[in-house]
Length: 361
Image (cartoon, rainbow, N blue to C red; front, side, top):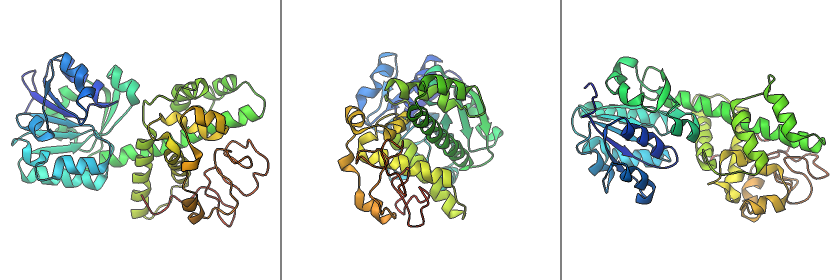
């Protein structure tokens, strides 16, 4: 099915990432139908000529290619595999492309279910954040061979400048989780560096600029650390979604009997930020965990929401926690008596820190 501008495209999920991606497809001249749980988030696309559908199934009914950009694996499973889901609603020969960062096994299940129905599906998580989505320069991580995805390549190229073909269903998701694990470590690294620079009496901006030009630099530091410095926590990528991605990576690591201590530490910190009200902030809000309570409160965080009993279950014995809101012992070292406390509030009896993500993910 070679795509042409007569190809009908459906796009389900027009949020922070989905709306600009769909916009590029529309701008390229494709006939686009959209669906989103909140219609107002699709208004910009509708004003530019996209059609509205009340349900994902309605959006997919006449589409040759269907894209989804959803929040969580549970959303993906429901939209694709429910009784009125996309696998059944799509017409024969249609291509279904999931851009969500989700479960590798779920991606395999969707692919297999589609092939039985004479339809084609592959996972295609993206990286590049909202900046890349708006610019149309995302990197696509395709869970298929190049030949399998070739019929929809012209559409994929409308919102990307780099495509990696990982070879099989679910492998795109695994590769994306590798990216997220590395990203999270970089986020923790620059937040640590900011805290150390501040406590050392350095000009934090100057120090980060110095680090960014050395081996300690990263894309996260270049793009997100300046936002942290400016107190700009608007989301390009949500805390709750990075927390979700890290949980998926840790679950997959557990299934394969490997340990990812860096990812576990990052999960601990992002889970804490999630608990205290930072779920809908940008991932750069991790730097707030190193700030005093006044700064955290101004950003909308509330330390009283932290599940202290859960922390105790993880081995917390000394009452220390990440934000320094209790006055002694915090992630950035803003209090005295850090002692046996730990960055993520997950201290252990043997003094080790932050290397257990719990059983809930």
